[in-house]
Image 1 (cartoon, rainbow, N blue to C red):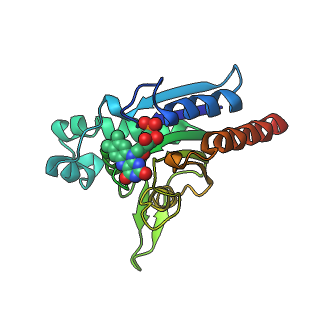
Image 2: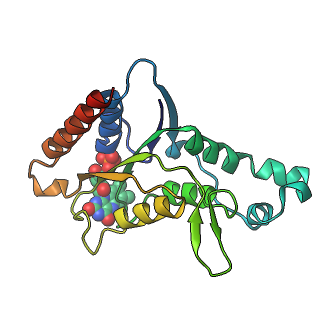
Length: 200
Ligand SMILES: Cc1cc2nc3c(=O)[nH]c(=O)nc-3n(C[C@H](O)[C@H](O)[C@H](O)COP(=O)(O)O)c2cc1C
């Protein structure tokens, strides 16, 4: 099994709840033969440009060398998603939405004819193979699935837009309330671990 590990917290592993839980979830579901692709979005994701969008919309056979070069990052990120069986993603809520690096990542993954397509009737088809996705969402006060949570429905929508619908959330929101938020998240992760043990 190949697991794509995606982190987006600007905090280091010793301080970040999402980084710690991403690692915990991965170690509880993976076995020694599994391969982990480590994609830390805080280490750099390019913002889209007019030239890049031009390359997206140019047929492969008509692309210039410059356009092919521009497409390399997007191709690499899409290939990582394609080749993985499971995606584990950590997303802290920043200003009620996803961190900028996650938005930049989404902009590089969303490519017509590659990850989604529209037909003449305007209907969308996701072009990626379905796979299991776990998203760990953390916040200080914003409640998961509340009106001010512009992360969970958005991420669910984006994965479904690409054809991936088996998406599970681990709720680590409202840590300021002092309730046993982390304990509950750890329990959820332990249950996923049992699911995987039963599968193998
Ligand atoms: C720049 C920034 C913006 C934040 N915005 C929000 C927010 O809108 N709502 C909220 O409840 N918490 C917000 N927080 C708190 C984080 O979501 C919370 O601390 C979370 O645990 C961070 O994830 P991490 O521990 O993996 O770094 C913000 C934190 C930072 C650094």
